[in-house]
Length: 567
Image (cartoon, rainbow, N blue to C red; front, side):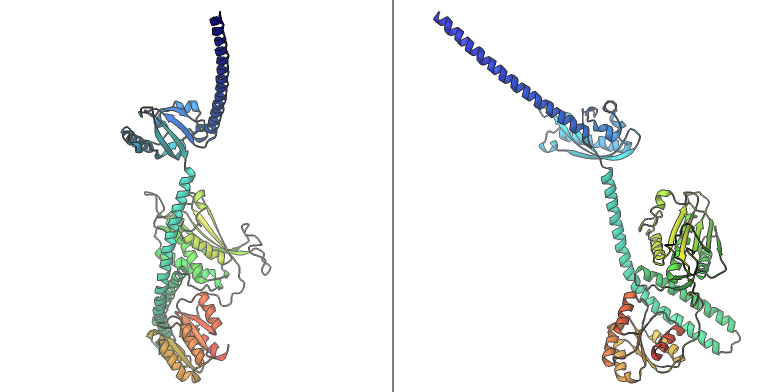
């Protein structure tokens, strides 16, 4: 009986302990299930809201799991996506490259080397349900069993459209920076070349000017014949000087000179230039009002804009047409005074009872036209649809017109040609209009003028100019010679014509030395590339006048005469 009671006691004790163990294990299981449910809920929440696609596949690259984010990225439901074969997801070329890379990675992974448990990254173009192709980046790795055998693939696919756009913009900025650096280097080169060319042109234009003055005093049988070709040579030289000024604008060393300008004179010049140089397949029409169309402008910059727009119109009717299309068309140039709805009174305030009126220049073509997307970007620096183009033409033109207080507007549709309209404020003062024939007369005076320059032919030309004006002239080749002569002769020297750029000392440095000798020295500074900054510095130092090379007899004689007479 005692043994039986002992056994029953042990059984009751073990039963009670077992119940405690079961209760403990049950509670632990409930807690684990709750954690598992919370973990699964969190996983589902992440899978459904993540911006990337999470997936697994078998070794035949068929999906075994796809996250719900597939709908947000691709437009497929999970059920639709699971039924798609791998080739339906990717653009053909990208799919071939992907499969080749996967095979290479699979071969390496099967060697069971530790470094081949790594992730591998593939970039490819994939296709959405609506047919849209977009760039993706896939990060994947192989799934292995407990024996390190490969049983599948797990990966994350990310839409990298924004990254690709940013990289493209970054590359574009790099290209623009490189182009800007090239232009800066070109500008430096142009500045030096322009200085030399202006010196050469000073000799050519000065010689033509002197011959024209001499011709007036001669009784020649073939006066008209000689005068015709002297005028032709002078006009060609002036146009060359204008071209140099355009190059100086590139180097930012051109002084902007705003003066009354009859735009018709510039348009006539551009019309003749286009008529003689554009392909014969382009018909050019030019029409303007009979009255003067006067603006305040820089003739060099304005003609640069007009020529650039005409060249663009020519290209739109020739080189920008598709192969096999008919070449040519009509270039129309018109100029008039208008009250346009495009113009507001704030842009062009009331002047002389003519509120909002402006001068409008239209340059239109029958070329390929501009589509809407491109039209929004044509004034951006470095943007161009033409091969081997800097993309600066329209950007520079836009800025020039803006600096002149004007507006540039474009009206165009793809395949229907283009019309560029320029609006300038009307200037009512027609005195001293730029582009009119210069008065060949020279200003006469008395006194002694010292000319300091490092170019012998310029010394000879300037000496002849001022000699005909009635001045006694002393020439000095180079800065040191000029300072030496002035030190000896300054008491009888009335004025100095001084070159800015010379070897050894600049014109401004020479002027400082002359001031030490005579604080009242009067000087005219001459230069082939006189920037606004240099001119301002010269005037602050005490230089009274400046003159741009190549100069004419009338201009330089007037500057000297005004200086000596205190005008």
